[in-house]
Image (cartoon, rainbow, N blue to C red; front, side, top):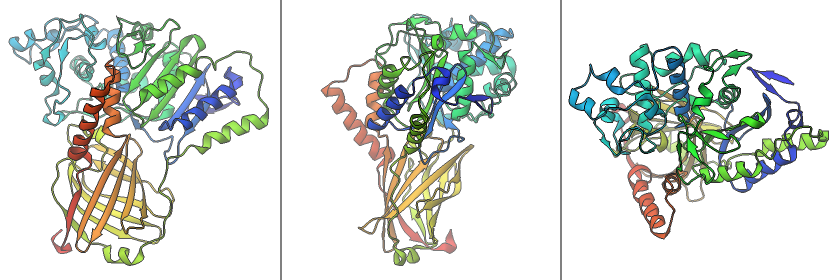
Length: 531
């Protein structure tokens, strides 16, 4: 056994009662279906039995967790209830009546911590609510009601943001500040970055960044009913409260899903439950088998991983398995190293063109949505980037450097690898810092193709750059695309896709690409002395 940062690595899967052959088939099918995970870790009986990081990603890098964040916020609320700061029946009016009008409080009458945790608050915040305005709590309070509290389930991320604001009201701390001594430090987790509103409050329902190791630690602790290294970390009984299905008969994306607890999908007879975030950020739990699977990913096709996980687990968890031969064990370990994205192959250099481009600045036509940050992360930011401008390239022997400006990002520099090596650049977008790995290759038509892998964020952005005398034109694509995202949204909400919805998704994808992604970026050379 190998100990690393509090996690134990099994010498082989059978040591923890996991079938190597089932694991091999699971990973083979992930590859055949081209499921775009970044990191996967599988644990049983407190031991890591398999882990895989797809090249060019790095296991140590944190990743945005989207709605997986909701489970972290729910854990924070469990601490607050345990410490007497909140109750499940604490209402919004109790905490915010001194800050808002009686009329506005009347519009939120009866909404409790319990309703916010199980998505039955009855409030309908618009999907297109502009997070850049900064008044997130006020926006929630002013939103319309679709039902009385407790009557109907509706998955609204802002419910969880409000829980964070309630916690801040009674503790004086943000969620991450509150959890630091209670959860993150006891589990020896990295203190995570959490996206915030303009007032400094954590988003709560989205925006926490975690690496796969910390996801596994959290999962293992939760699986053990909140115990870590023999110490009760998460308050006793709270994991059971979170995984009790308070609402049943829900959405249809996962056909076997039966209910929703406190920010947790649960309700199957075998005790299975999961934490879930957009673009396949998952923790799958099997309490009877003492096992969990954690994944961070940039694949919007949740149905693919649901079906594969159900096909191989918990079947792969078996006690008293014979240990496989060394050859088979080594073959399985080596197979996990073969997962890679389709990195641009190294191409012949266009030295004459490169020499003429060095240090030229291009003033870009202003486009609000023009950003290098993937679309999935800009949507909910309080300080959105955009308006890419002042692009400059400088080519050297093995790589090029690209410099550019953006709103709420300032000036950044990215290394574009032209030799196939992995050099990672640090980029700032407002208070968010991410790492970008870029690969470039000259095409036969004289255009420069660039792949941008944002290590912490889903989606791979590709530019095809055309240089023409003193002008530049950039064609921009994003994967996964908006069509896949919309299809997943329909399925998540239990809407059966049909020909008409498929047409709507394709039209929306086309329009969205024009507005947010695919509009060509056009610029003209600018005198360096004026930059």
